[in-house]
Length: 266
Picture 1 (cartoon, rainbow, N blue to C red):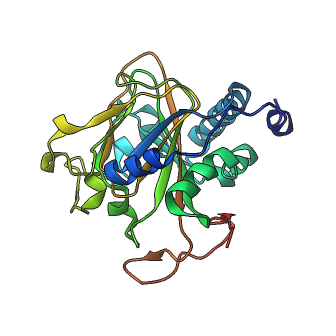
Picture 2: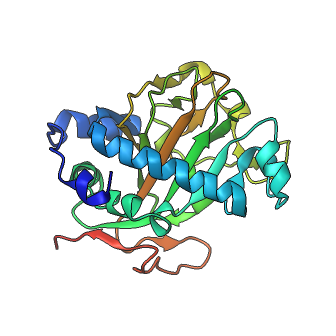
């Protein structure tokens, strides 16, 4: 199905967040909305997702976060654990570019961070069936180092997701305190803070295909391995208010093709 055909499909029933839901987000650091995308659009995005990962496996334009920063294509493709990442899907696919401007997603983002919304970046996070790797406990802003730390992420699933195939685990209230992180003992690109927290206090969020979860950039979260016979295709959009800076340099994160303004009301 073409992008145009997908755009012609009827939209899902949708309501803006209630004040109670907004308050819950600010208290807990996340809000699970549930299913938001329509089935025809989900099918379009699945086909594009699969196409882009098949292409990336041929060209090497992806990372396997389970193997660190190796550039060896065979090692990335054939590792026993595979937590595969493509950054900026919006620069490889018009369908994912269009998704950034989906009014239903932006309405929720606006409820949480205000009327002016800029893209920080997007990414696909793929756990293949049988050997999908973990993403360890972390706060996103430990990687990003943005100030002020008020970015919000939309984590979107293209498959039914539960604890068995890589559902999101989140630590309620953890967004209120930034924590120091260390590299995993395996080395590589992932941070891990799991030994500093009581994981029994975590909440697990199951989502249907087309479901969304929004979380703060300092909310501790983790996704477990996927050892099932079901793949787990997830996509994350990271939103920020204009004026966000890099902590190390103080430089503004400028509006650009890679970081466009997605909505501006004032």
